[in-house]
Length: 191
Ligand SMILES: C[S@@+](CC[C@H](N)C(=O)[O-])C[C@H]1O[C@@H](n2cnc3c(N)ncnc32)[C@H](O)[C@@H]1O
Image (cartoon, rainbow, N blue to C red; front, side, top):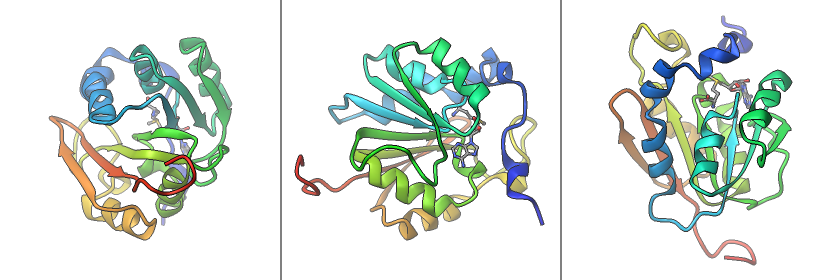
């Protein structure tokens, strides 16, 4: 059996920002779809790494925060996004209050976490409007993680149901898969 931590990205930080990866990830389109149709002001980038997506959200004028278990990645994220708030933390135990962010984004992270159900439940807890997950498709490719580390669409959707998220909106991008869940409004005092 795999040690869960085998799944964690262990490459060099520069690889997270290589031009090839940025093109593959379709960063601007992903950010656009994450914000589409909602009036978002605050976003949390879970598993932010070097802050690639946090930076793209900040370019759109959003207030951004990011968490990651890796202090060395967080240092780089702070350099790239000086106005962002970056804290050490894991997706399974997000160090922010309930409903603190309009959008909670997990970019290439869900397949690395120890407990996807807990991670999605936590994302739903701190989100006010939407939870977004960007993942690799479940196919063998030269780039990205090996097949056994990738999540099937069925596994992601099952984890989300168990986490109490509602119906999913699934989008197949040229090289990636994007999942969006709306947070029901009318929950909590500020709804
Ligand atoms: C492939 S990198 C993606 C980084 C960034 N989202 C991006 O797309 O550039 C995966 C990131 O998830 C982080 N990570 C691993 N396990 C995590 C967990 N349980 N909770 C939050 N982040 C985690 C890693 O430290 C790493 O920064």
